[in-house]
Length: 321
Image 1 (tube, one colour):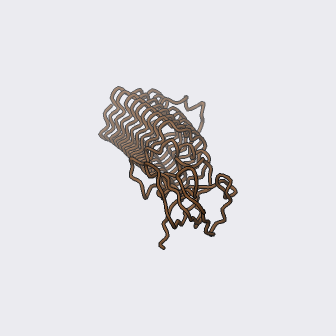
Image 2 (image 1 turned 30 degrees about the vertical axis):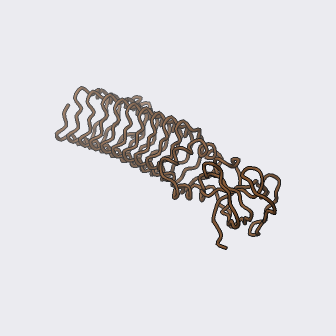
Image 3 (image 1 turned 45 degrees about the vertical axis):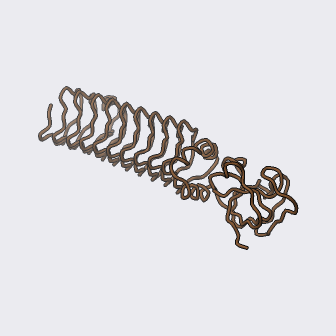
């Protein structure tokens, strides 16, 4: 008889409702089976485990043989014989869920997934398109995780590790990313409107065409960051470190770039060597900003407040003042 593959969860001692399983051994139920009453239960799809078993369980791929009976929506089944074939880590379970599910199904499991995320290491995990709106993920490790097109609006990611995370077109509207590590993160076209990025590390991050309208970026690290054509209108960039940043054709209208007078912070070069070629800085507040050796060619600086700004060595060919 051909074995059927499925998924099951147990508690930490590999038991389920008082029955002790032994991994790799066949277990047989003698008697009539009935869903949610008698027999060995399992799920045909990995995604259904999250709704049918307690959180923080141990997850297994199982082999099933003999008769199986499904519940009304086929999210759970009961069988006569079962074997725990292979244990799955949380990361492996999510990968299986992604492979067998479309984006709509992932969104439907938002609560189940977000409830587990806080307790798990998710580096290198594929969470493409997942819906984590308003989830509390404070301090989570999402290093190298794929969050492309994920919904993270109003999510708490304070102190999170997002090193080299993939956030292409991710929705981070009003997300809390204060003190988060986004070094080398890929955030092209990401929506960070009104997001909190205070004290965050965005060193060498790619934010090309990202929306940072009204974002709070006080004291953020943008060293060598790619902000080409980014929307930074009304963003709070006070005390931001932008040495080597590329803001080619970025829109910084009404952005707050005002720093303390340079004599108070001797030797500070927070915006030195920044590429602002073609950037829109019309009416921007640049008072006291150190723009030495900055590329301001063809930048629009009409109405900008440049009082006490340090422009030694800056290239201003074609700029509008």
